[in-house]
Image 1: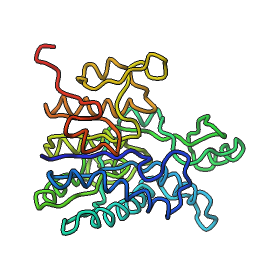
Image 2: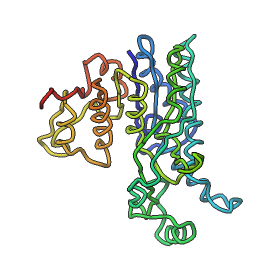
Image 3: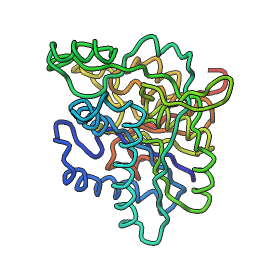
Length: 307
């Protein structure tokens, strides 16, 4: 079976933890052990979030007095892919002796006319005190929004149209390689309509939607979206909260999952299942093997014909 795994953004840094290198090196062991159990029996592609790591790189770039301007987000996103990729590759090689493991820098093509560019919504980087935020907004043309602790920069979140390296990923997994790729949704790029030349854009691609796009391109059998909860819930945040173990794309969308948490995962699972007829699931990192074997998580299966 061919499985694409999307690791949650807090897989290497749990909520509230400081982004220290030693801590991430320690946390990645748990991640590698969880996904390695799947690699023994399946073709495996691992994608991942990058919010804490990207936030750290943004903060460092903004504060560096030697720079005329902070680094563009596409380049910082590429840096974060390398940072997380090397941690995952080294640790996966340790727990999968003799198996090829590679991290591939990945680009995601988006539409230059995507409406998201007119409505930035994705917060990136730290919260700044109001006066500092207003200075950065005026100096760099950033869009800022209210956040806990001050104001944060927000970026457009265009949808993934194409994963440029999907053919290379397919070749690698056909050779038996475990591939780490599409980190943080991939480096967002647009193509010049006249020349086809690529350029990076100041945007963020949702990692789960990118994973779904990649899984579809690879003709994967299973899309596994891992997070820090065991399954989806209906009436989340109320005393009547109930776990949901089985859903269809129609039921997922009708559940109106919160856009700032499970909404993108639900939409990614729904798109993949609708477009392929294959299966997806959402659940906890430590239960990855159990989820694929139907013993944990929320399974997303195709709607019945005519439903």
